[in-house]
Length: 276
Image (cartoon, rainbow, N blue to C red):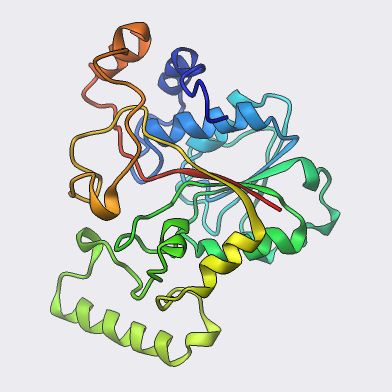
């Protein structure tokens, strides 16, 4: 899986352009879309559980990657849904609130999490029901995001506030006051919630004990400045982009796509893992 990561790229360009979602703002752009497709093609599961559906773009990608697989789509709110698969089963609830014991192909499944939830809790829930493979689309770097990510677990940073990204912090005095009150309540009931996580070493030790493989994928191509307005260094350091001036001419369809100024190349450290 870590070799020849561009082998589906040229075919994927047309799949991406044919998405029934014309504007997927708030959802995945090209980089994470491609590697979601890539991972699914490589793993070839019999069942995909999609947690966080948004407008339906990722459901479309699952169908394109795996035409014969079973799909279960979960979201706590389907108000934004545009594309609804005829073959998928839809449940308006959270991953943790489903009894997975009666589901077939648990051992041949993959969980796709694009739901801005605590990644450590998702790992525990996967282990509880016997799921072994997962894609974590929201893998925020230290100091960013609205949920506890794999990178934050590995870096022992915790997730000390509800929202860490400056661009999404409350702006008005009233909103700031309300957020401080919310966080005060969460801290008072620290052991009964999972939005705020204090810096610690324990979570990474548990991750190492239970996860046997973790692959953070690079961007196919990315902008010079990160989605969060920072340089790609320090906490934002990433692997080299797969497409550069040295090989762009080998991928003419992608090169043509790059000329479309409406195509977004946001990148947020999408990661695949396998449990022991």
